Length: 169
Image (cartoon, rainbow, N blue to C red; front, side):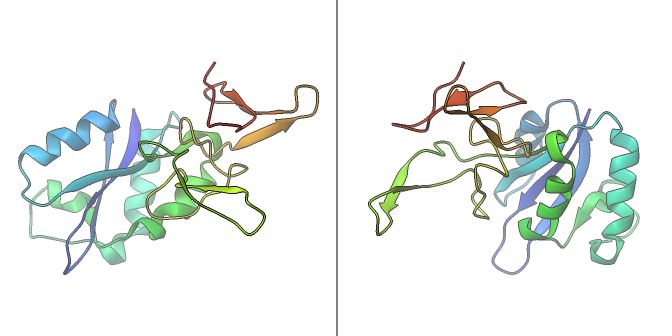
């Protein structure tokens, strides 16, 4: 199971649910059914010790707990923004993932040297390819291989030169 972070966006406040699921993407859809506010999966940690990781994160963010009385589920909701949990995802390394944009390779502009600038992996932060794989969202990053002159993700095994977007294996 993985420990997931699901964001409930609202103009007045931001709430983050930290919970566990075998399918973090599906969990977000299931939670949306009973919630009028839009929910987005922000990321997840799949390190094989989900109960310990979840308990550690709940303790770390106890100061931000929504604490809606005695509801069991309310204990998993915190007043947090995506930037607050980014360090936790990065610290998890190859076990940490961000929910990536639909098209991380969409060109949004060009820098002064005419190098394309892409949408990027995450909606809430600028992550570089050496930090986070744009294909699977893993915090293992893309590693340059001198032999092939291409970038490689150790998690999803993507291999690309980033010319014209990405190339999955």
